[in-house]
Length: 615
Image 1 (cartoon, rainbow, N blue to C red):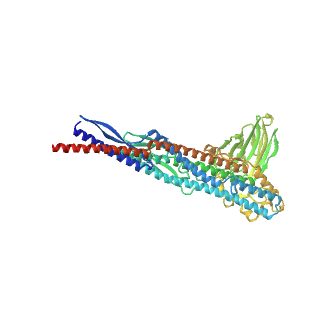
Image 2 (spheres, rainbow, N blue to C red):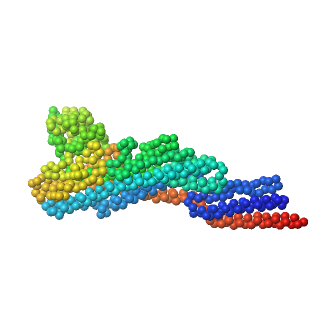
């Protein structure tokens, strides 16, 4: 080996050592930097005509694509779970633990206890005052919970707006990074720094929306959602969101922008195609999808259940039953009921046997033509039919007669009376009962029922379905009848001449609280995932608290489990990409020793050359 070859090899070794020292120092300096990928040198043999040495081929960054793909998927799930757990913890604090002083079940128990005291001492002013106080406390609790739920929905919209701005910025920056990576004149050090920033941004995007990443040979990427909508391919798509401001319980999402009461989230692709993110199911996970779920479903379900409780409270005390009078006609037997007092939302119920099968039909007064036709059968077999009473009772009888079929005859014999008869000689049907249920509108003289709880401005709550359902958001509006607040003797005196010591009305109301049963949710509500509550008012409260408690518990468990998954992935990433200071220090010593050895060779070569020059 000639002197020149020896010198060349030593210099090449020193250059490789110097590059190696630079990489080690960079690794050590970034040991705690999030998203940094450990770097190393790739060396190749350099074959000369008279020698063999090594040179640096490129700087390599640690990278496992399969690990990155899994991390993106789980990061989206974690983002969604973080949002859900945060909202569920807020809801847990709002509802409180069952049995706690301010929880709904405790409030209802206190109200029932005050009624019980009133039944034994109706003449006692303090007992009557306590009923009013407990009723107001119950109403105020429902008002507070409803307002809080809507505040949480507004908070969800606010967070969506922030995250939309973030994801648009990330996608725009990634588009610029793609352009940088496609520039082949960039040196390795610059490209690696850009690749680290690329992966950090993709991780941030995946936390907000679910993404699938296509990696190209030049390091650039294309992003699209799991539903297949492109987020970045050359140019970036843009999310657009306009908050709706304050949300009321009646403000719900609708695919028709003219009917929707919440902020609309759309995505516009570079080609100009704009799509409603919710209507097209574009997002499957990530923080934004979870926020939409909270705003449009989870919190709406909570509101619906609060409304069921509020409507149950109001109707239990204000509803009066008019039992049918037995009649016979032409060998057919049945009942007559006067439905003159039925208001929109009130109903009558007929129970009969047909071919040995028991049947129950509820007929609800619905005068809003846009809500008709209405004919639903619940899981327990109860059929609900909505009929328009505005055209007269004769039209109601005709419509019901057609709906029930030939086995039952429905007619309007006179005035506001509806008659329902079996099939007589055919003997395939028997009418078991027929009763009308209406809401009392007067505080006295309309029966023992009392509208203790009223709607806005003292309006009687009838559960009307006309226009916007009266039940929708009722828990935010429910209040104690101001006439009763001003004169608590109305809790006892159902007529002007009733004795102040008469316990008939208090007994009726406490019996109604315990005995009147309700079935919440329409078919449409159930189809959207709304949990159906049923039973008396106490059951409505217990089922709501149990349901929400289970959701909160399940969410916290799922959140903890997802946290473990993320910790595992972080450990794998640390093993694959992380910097081990001990290893780097060991490499530093090796490189220093090698550099010293090469430097010694250069020194000796220099001395030899000088010696030769002196000969």
